[in-house]
Length: 68
Image (cartoon, rainbow, N blue to C red):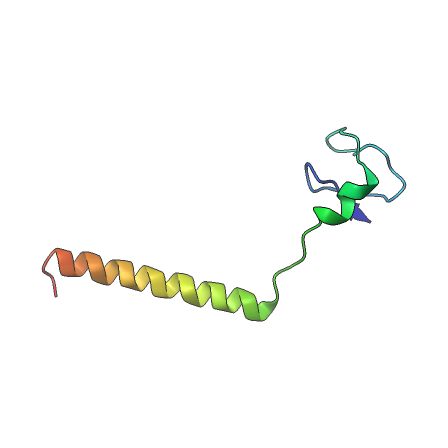
């Protein structure tokens, strides 16, 4: 199975048209637009970075309001 490059729905390799959006699928487009899942280690790093950024924003706001 491959993904449609327009709507990312699952398409059979032999289909020339996406059954979901109806757009024609060229063979060269199918591998280029396919997405791979982010590894668990990468997801944890993104979540940790987002939490750190949020804490820095809250600390900056608290400092600008003279709460600290």
